[in-house]
Length: 163
Image 1 (cartoon, rainbow, N blue to C red):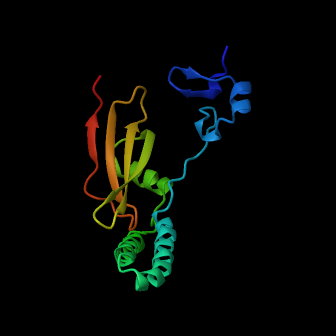
Image 2: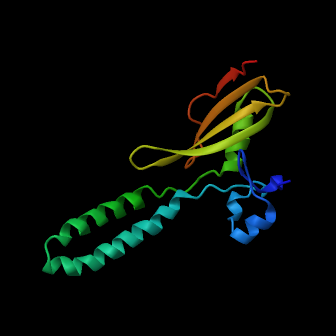
């Protein structure tokens, strides 16, 4: 019988010995449980600096070949966008979950946070889905937060869970 902790996806099971011998990455191991950290959008600055460096290096070649100017300009534009969209989280996912629990009119059981991005500068938003603590949950809510300022965006959308 296959080890259920090595279940890759529904219907596919790999026993532990085979998974280890074939080098199946740990992030595909369904048995590994732990907190997932959403990467900070501020990491985009790294790409911005790389684009600037490559663009600067190509500038020397662009002096001799005018076709390189197109690439230099494109790299510069991409660098500016990456720098402009490298927001730092003002609130992390745990705080978004706590704020969502305080914003809904019921005791929260299960909740999940997801980050999305809005606008040309890709401003991060937290979307939190929270379910009531009763079993099975009778209510659910969607609460949105600006991930930079921590402000709640509008009222929480609350509805009954259909039976």
